[in-house]
Image (cartoon, rainbow, N blue to C red):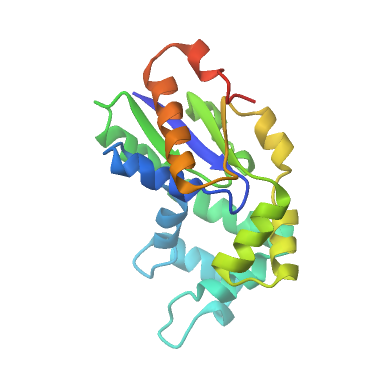
Amino acid sequence: MKLIAITGTIASGKSEVCNFLKQRRLPVFDCDGYAHLALLQSQVTYQQIVDAFGRDILDANLEIDRKKLAACIFENDEKRLQLNAIVHPFVKEGMLRFAKRHEDKEVVFVEVPLLFETDWLDLFAGIVVVTCNKETAIDRMVEMRGYSEEEAMKRYASQLDPKVQIEQADYVIYNEGQLSELKRETSRMVNAFVSRRRRDVHGVNAA
């Protein structure tokens, strides 16, 4: 079994790629989704986060308010790193347990938007970067996520330079077109990794 990371540009379609993988009944671990569990009162990470950020991030039911927490770390690198130091080990442990449960599979995919901000690179046999140009990303955030153009621009600027991501990729999916084309590109990517021929990974879509 080999772990393949799915990462890339904000609003590029990473989740859509992973949805296509799930439709093919391939195992996919969602790091962002699992990270939300770290905020629950039942997790040891809950108290660590409250201790680090204060009770102002709690709602009336003493649950961590994700919007309040996000406001604390956005544009504050020190706070963001502090949160990552709590949540990333929690997510990594969950990811490795998921991989263990699927060790009979040839590949296990992991959607990890902040891959290059972690120390996990050595865990993966391949890195897939899903990307699009800046204008496309901004338009998608405005139209599909309800951000103002200013908010979208800030979020785009806060990510690692897409060119740097592409340089570190084993396979790149450029998502500028229709979902049908993205689905075809996803199938090509799967075939490249499942083939076990490393040279296939560095094919026409490689960085």
